[in-house]
Amino acid sequence: MKQRVFSGIKPTGHLTFGHYSTAGKWPALAEQYDCIYCVVDLHAVTVTLEPQVLRQDTRELYATYLALGLDPEKNILFLQSHVPAHSELSWLLSCHTMFGELSRMTQFKDKSKNNANNINAGLFTYPVLMAADILLYDAKIVPVGEDQKQHVEIARDICLRFNGKFGDVFTVPEPQIAKTGARVMNLLEPEKKMSKTDDNDNATIFIMDERDTIIKKIKRAVTDSDGGVRFDPENKPGVANLMTIYSVATGKTFDEIEKEFDGKGYGIFKPAVAEAVADCLEPVRLKIRGYLDDTARLDAYMRDGAERANAIAVKTLERVRNAMGFYKC
Image (cartoon, rainbow, N blue to C red; front, top):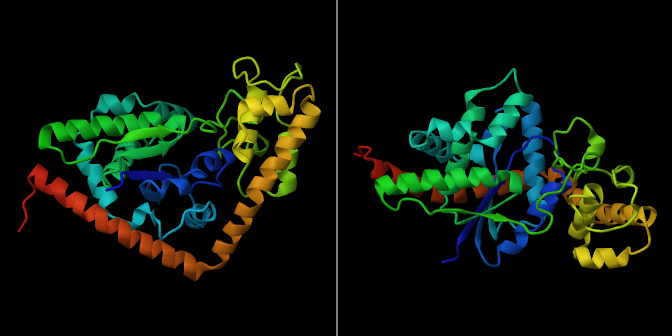
């Protein structure tokens, strides 16, 4: 049997070029792995969202999965809230997760600072639900960005603890970090990760940005006074970030990019990056709009994906219940 891959993204706002750099590699995985991708809408409600915004962002994210090339026949694509087993397994796993583990999670600390008026229990137990998402499907490989690696590691810890007590109930997952483009940074503050929730839209390239918007944003991106195009994240973080973005858009290596722009300066380099990104994202944006305009087809894909995901999830949940000793009549 093929090893299984699982990954998911929250439907909160438009996806960025950073998401594209990661999720854009997902379609090729279907040739080698059994792939499951989820719109993790239950995770989205740790922050306050208007219902209509959540619905709209959920549809757009699902359409983006399809537009990026995830074939719903070769992959399982579904909404997390459409498979009830995620919530039940999260509760069962929370009883095998230590308070200290959760309190040390970097993202909880960061999000607590940014959401001081809404530090809810869901924000704290978020990693347990993420562990349930992964373990429900016996996923061996979890493609994630560098910032999510800690969540996969705690999922592994929970899994090993549970298996140690009840037997080999779950497959132990492994994070898979892309070697290139895994960490696309902020255009204006290249020491920070590019984020879809940044207060300044000019710092972020969104997949749904129009061509002119993309070009303007990249032309305004921070570089330095040196003028040379070299991959040196420590001393030239802005240039290194633009090289990463260009590499994702074109498939070129950093060595190839350095040779291409040797002696040419930023006046040539930045417009080239801008045009490459705009060319890269335009067909994706048009496909997303096409899927959003065809509600019947989009909903049919969602229903089929949920049915297929649920068929796997209920078997795992039954295995967990039996292992833990829940009475069955």
